[in-house]
Length: 310
Picture 1 (tube, rainbow, N blue to C red):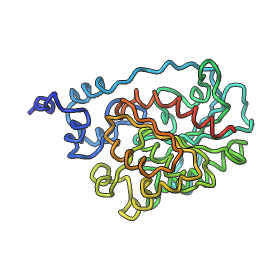
Picture 2: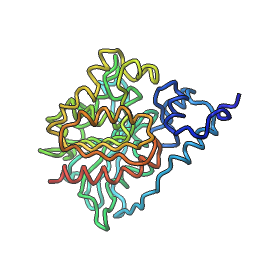
Picture 3: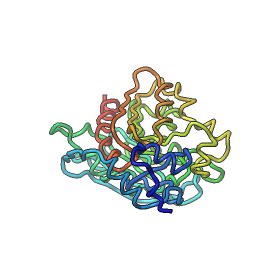
Picture 4: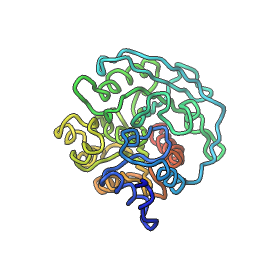
């Protein structure tokens, strides 16, 4: 039987996604985060994916840049992750290495790494974006290899500790993210979830968080059925459930964006119900695809610029 021939055309995109997964969320379409469950062979049929990708496309934003920032890539041995990890740091145009700047920790999605954490642009381009003909407030950005464990601690691999105890101090040694209101998190999909998780766990360190299409499950069983490696145990899920602990964001400026046809949307709606008053929420047309991610990167950076450069 063809994987698409018996799919009724009257079904919505979300219904098709849910049916293909037995009710479990999946990343659909080409995107910098990687194709999470497609790589596991959960969704069958290239034709179905092509149809979904076309149906989910949102208008491409018109992006303009004030030149290109400076970037530096390298690696270090992470004691928290027990392996070498790569990273990239970018400075905005006109701000050489050593300039004191706020810091955005950009967390990549599943299947990605420090080199492709953003959708459709590099960190050096992201910090050089213009808004209405004017440059963003000057901010630096760092990306790093966090693996595919959803940025929460696993036995022998703790990407959260790597970011908090190793990466951020390294950046602060370069005069980035020092002082009050100077560090924000941002991420797409798994990285969007991570951006919220870090802000909940370290509210004294992270002043703002911007999550694009965060990959949020509402139960351990749901998460394990979709991605067995996302959490090490039921107790690990409870500890790292951003919905349950959303009240910890009361002192953090938060922005969450999700597409109406994103299969993670139900989890995002559960989160929104628990977010502290004042959080910025953008629910609009779109799916869990590269075009939606790209459309939300500039608004997320504008939000972080507003709250990190007061």
